[in-house]
Length: 481
Ligand code: ARG
Image (cartoon, rainbow, N blue to C red):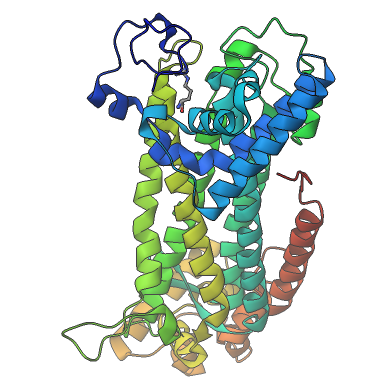
């Protein structure tokens, strides 16, 4: 059915078909349509339209009656979408034209006035920002839940001793709580990055129209305020073309997933029979269809694997924007799928971790035994000798020879007798055993950032305070849609 005013017009697209002499090729229509994926933006599109219509009436471009009809119609459209009865049409190309067409079906000609003073170019940029802003708030809450779980677990494990590694070789004893708080630090930086990214998401393109602004007496500050945006975008050309905020979010997500993949890797190692440092409850693991004994740490493995797809989305978006001339280009339609998939991946991975971390069961005897075995107090012995006046280089050599002896004899440093130790240095006396114990070793690293149990407890408290401060400052735009 043609809605064109002229009967001589061919059956072209009702939103822009006026200058066309033949209908769009059926394949091209499908190829260029985005409704299959951009309908995710529907409720935010309506949110933006409500604010736009309200502003247009305020400045006298629409009458109050027209505005009321539009707002009422949008409520009905929204109800159809929420109820799942809205029929999306590929012929109508995208979410914006689907909604506008349905509005016009419902309220008649007034529906066609909604698009006054705007373009799909500023509309879509606004929709994505509104959508992403809400999603960021959900991601931030989940990230906070995960951080909180890590802090609690770290406190419970503040005294648990495990080997610390460099090069994945036993290095020095650390506390498990200290290790968990290292993860927490990574996530605290991600959290900061996310909230910083949100500031640049929260800028309003609407009013830029197609690219140059509009001739209507619009009030962009009013629209921005209605939508909870910090401010209108400064430059109309930049406003319709900028997708930095989506790239930034995906960069945040890439770093977050990189961190989760590192945590995953350690969880996978630690659940293996060879490490046996922790147990994950059965509900986070799966079995093997052939090997009955198997319990596989699928959740961390899968999170580790999901990292790749998020990195891929970051590359997609960076490449999408590379060399694009100002202002809007159809290329930009390709921004949505990578962004949407990044969002759902991040949310799933965070949920998996936030649920799983508090359920970790440590096998502290195994951890301690592993720390005891790997000459992990060798540095403590060297430091002991230095405190007794030996130069560090010489102390290093003395301990190196003690370790070589231990390797030959199958003994850890703490298993050796005083006489055995004194073969390598007369300076050693019986107070040496205090520093060769694991507990003495970790307790001695008693400074801010160190692994001593009391430092871990203090660090956990500081982390909890910092997280609380972020959460109480959490932004809620209080916008209803
Ligand atoms: N579906 C389009 C997108 O996602 C909306 C904007 C289209 N604007 C245009 N002039 N074709 O980018």
